[in-house]
Image (cartoon, rainbow, N blue to C red; front, side):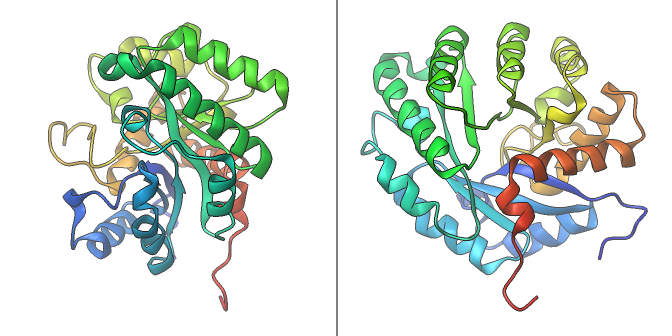
Length: 271
């Protein structure tokens, strides 16, 4: 049990299967626990890698997982099917669909296939009741249009992972009842505008994440990120909302449990 002086938080988005962490997962989890990070969701970005990501969740009590086709890989990977995603979602530690989304910064030439993939993931999220995990970059208009169109077909839950887009996209997503996740980007000194977007959002719609091994917050910027560092971003989040760290951490835990209700309800067999 974590010392009460160290509030518990959850890294809602990391990539523990990436080669950056080969042979270090046990140590990463131990360092995370020391920082109060007692749960993490590791994200599979190509479905062919799902068995490896699933194995991490099965081997480590604090680790949950999600799977989908990343938009930057959508043109290279076989198109996922709704049935395939629903089948994967039956695993007791599979807690979200994605990451999926749109990325026109690097991959605008595959916009059509990205949109098709996104809609498939939305349908699977709607049918399973699991949250959609969205990557959005340089695609605000299409993202707003597609997610709104899909929501009108039937409600679903969603988090805008590593949110760093416009205030307009943020408001549109919040208006649909979705969540915004703070990554290390929100802690960068030059991210004042982004922090203002978060400050204007409802506190009960905020998550924290690392997106590790990427986007390490200060003082580790430019180095490899890891789940423990989500506590550093959360401390910035507490400042953004004018809260004590313990109060902000507790609120993000409630938010995570509400959105990722399957993770909140999970108990290790025999525990």
